[in-house]
Structures are given as structure tokens and as C-alpha cells.
Image 1 (spheres, rainbow, N blue to C red):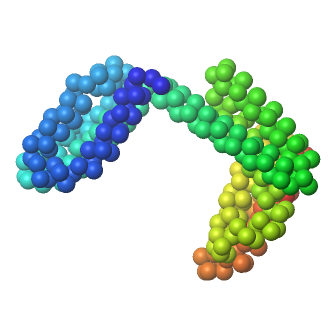
Image 2: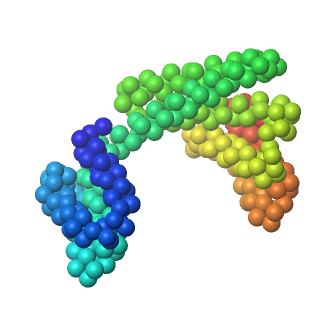
Image 3: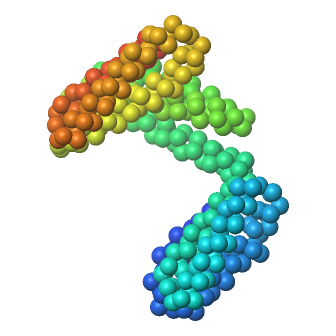
Length: 291
């Protein structure tokens, strides 16, 4: 992580921690005065302030200008005896400086976040693959499909790691997302195949509805990941999959309406139908997924 990013994160954490001290500042004018001075130093004379100036970034300059205005308002509020408002304004001023720091080094900040997001998703895939292996060992009827799914996912993981090593984090994230979504769908299929586990898992119809919402979201994201490039380059495929995707969206909207009216049974049935439409769309592109 870059030094500037560490500064920004530290400032944000400080903002959150100090923000929780508003009551103490209201009781201790000296503490509030020290914080007014500290934030003034941050805005005008800190290393972050110098880097914002050096960057020449207009968005960073605007955020710093807003921080100055907020600091002046906080000073006025403190002078008027409104310590709580002054404390809140100082929180806002600090957050503006964090935003300014991010704008001053967008490539560094974006790169750090992209790598962090990739590594988090990679850990999630590894956890899902471990769960898939365990279920396959416990439920031999799933072993063959699980082995094939795991092998495909491992190929995606290997490719994603290679892309990340080559600093192509966008490509690495897209590839690891495909592994994540495909593995998650395979796990859900295994779970739904075991009716006993499924019936014991859901304590209420609302809980089952929430599970179906998550399953529907997963299939929708998987359809986006798998079909995006194919649809763009193949007009015939676009005409083939679009009706499925539109029907899936309509059924999802109807399901949410039913759930809002308290009919979770009806909502679950509609969500299952919606998810089946996503499966059909994906399969029509030549990619097999369980469902």
C-alpha cells in the first residue's frame, strides 16, 4: 500500500474514532480546541496537504477547499458554544481531506483497492472449493459433477493468479469472479439436490425467500459475466438470450412484489422460475451450468 494511501486510511480511522468523542469534547472545551488545531494542521501543513498541492489535481483541490470551509464553520460553532456541531463539522472536514488524498493519487488508491478486492475474492473461491469438496465426500452422488466443476474453477484460479502477477488486475478480477460465481452456483445446486438438508435449513418461509433472492442474484451476475462478450460479438446469440433475461427480470420484480405483500410462498416460486430463465440463457450460449 502506498504511503499516501496509508495516510488516508489513518485519517479516516482517526475521523471515525474522534467522531465518537463528540460528547467528551462538549464537556471539555480544551479538547475541542486541540482538535481544531489538529485539523487545521492537517488541512494546511501536513504531508497529505503537501502531496495534494503537488498533484495539481482539481478534484483534490476542491475537496481541500471544502475542508477549509468546514473547518471555519467548526471554529465559528465552537466560538458560539455549540461543541457538538463543531465536532461533527471537524469530522466532515477530515473526510474531505481523505477524499482529497484519494483524488491526488487515483492510480495508487485504485490499484491498492483492486488488488485487495482480488485477494478477497480469491479467498472466497478457495473457501467455496473446500466446501464443495467436503460435500462431494459426504454425498457421493455429487462427486462426478463436483470434480468437473472444481477442475474448471481451478483453471480459472490459475489464470487469474497469472493475470494478477502480470499486474492485469482488471482481467484477474473478471476471471476470479467467474470462478466464484460458477462454484457458488454448483454448490447451490448440490444443496438443492439434498432435500433433507434444505428442509432443515430454513426456519421460516422468509428465510427461504432470502436464500432464493441470493441464488437469483448469483445467477444474474453469472449470466452477465459469461454472456457479456458473447452477446456483443454475436447478434444471433443476443436475440436468443434476451427473452430469457427479460423474463427473468419480470419474474424477479413480481417475486419482490409478492414478498412485499407477505406472500413468501408465491415469491419463492416466482424466484425459482426467474432463476431457471437465467440458467436457460446461459445454456443457450453453449455453457452448461447445473440448475
